[in-house]
Image (cartoon, rainbow, N blue to C red; front, side, top):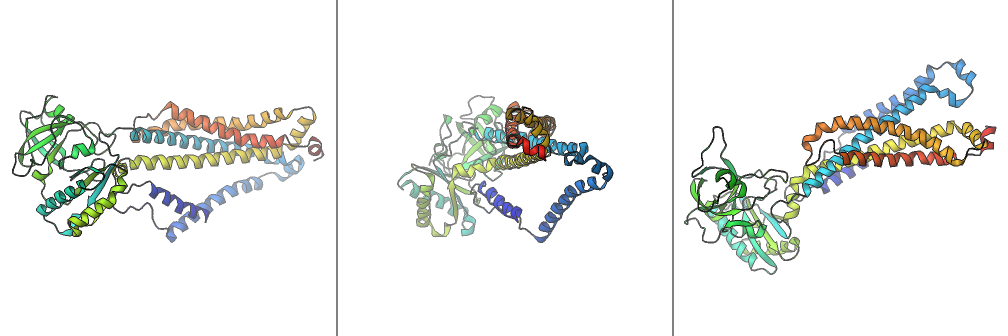
Length: 468
């Protein structure tokens, strides 16, 4: 019952990690009878195996030798002590592997979050329109977008407004076109497929993507005007060898375009991607009725404050187009790091669970050991042993097990982390900081788990223990 409640809580926690991207997301499955039956069977089988081991040990023990010994501490025997020690060492080793993995994934997530995407999503409201439900034609969509932009610009607090058929670091794969660059010689097997976006005027100002050379799109870049495009730095480096692209001719989307601007590189699909060639086309010149329409509104206040403005402007422009989803762009683009975020949180949770189990196992074994050595501890204290000596003895025994488990776990972690090295970003599978921090944290928890039974051992009454 407790496990089922924890599962429900974990599913809810997982859903809180998912940004509001505008479509439903399910983080789990319904608990069916088959799943519950399988889980119950696995738990009962594990409990039976764990409980049967001591019973089999007692069953195979020589009763005459046990009676001759007459001591509970000796009854367990060396084999039993070795078994307990091996179990504790195994728990500590597993906790070490889990904590190292958690450290690597957490560092990887923070590294990828620290990357500058090349645009500023702060203060921008992202609005996604489901215009296909309104039955618009391509021309009607263009007119709707133009009128909506004009209404939003007249609203108080709105600084800039633009729209596009693609938003970087989003959930879509992104459109692309084949290009033919004037003066560029291709090599055999080279792909000339380049990703692009249709953007309206003020796109670069709204996204705060610097125009390094040339100009932005403007209202004069309409369908009857000369086709124009803006390329990024990676495009210029590949096709123009780093020379100025302004004024050069590029054939794309069935038209010969003149490059009018050079934009700074940014991230388009993943924060960890290398610079890739990319180009922008004027929305008014190349839009062909695609259902993808995204509005970007930079507001003077918080992005959420622009949602009522957007809703009112849409209703005034065309009530039939009221189906849209709005969310701050900074939150929407977090979907690009969702995988790393989930991995870091799940590995962190697994590490904490393994750490808790290791601490409980170490505490239980040392508590049992102290209870079995009460007469010995009483004799030592009666002969003058100080509490500090007793603590050192018990803690030393427990920390020996912990350090052996830590050593085994470190070796195992070196092997296991190499299997997930491709999932890490800017952190090596043998990252020293992750290993050192995991070792220090685990050692501190182990020290606490052994100190508690050791401190309780100093409370033993020597005379009472001798009488026993």
